Length: 90
Image (cartoon, rainbow, N blue to C red; front, side, top):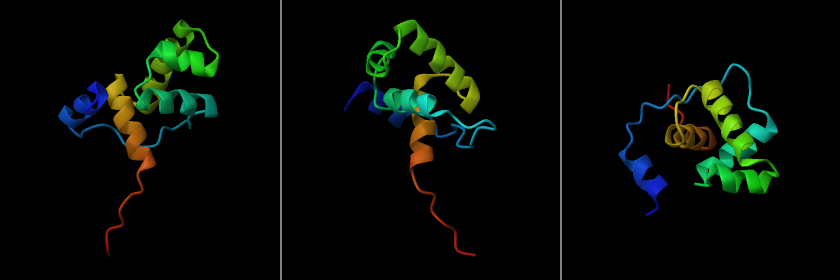
């Protein structure tokens, strides 16, 4: 089990799952997906053709946009957005 999987298992599930008022851009979605895969800022920057410092600053902007404060919460938020919601019978 990876460190990110362990952290996710230990986190309370009180992570915001709402959609941000301003949608994430395609590049923000790409960076967030890489973060959710467990990539470091440096690794994500390399994949995206960015400087590591730029990736770090973009990540902070994404965190503010989606209402989280760290990589683990961002990963949980991303996973919640990717998981189809179960419908509750009426």
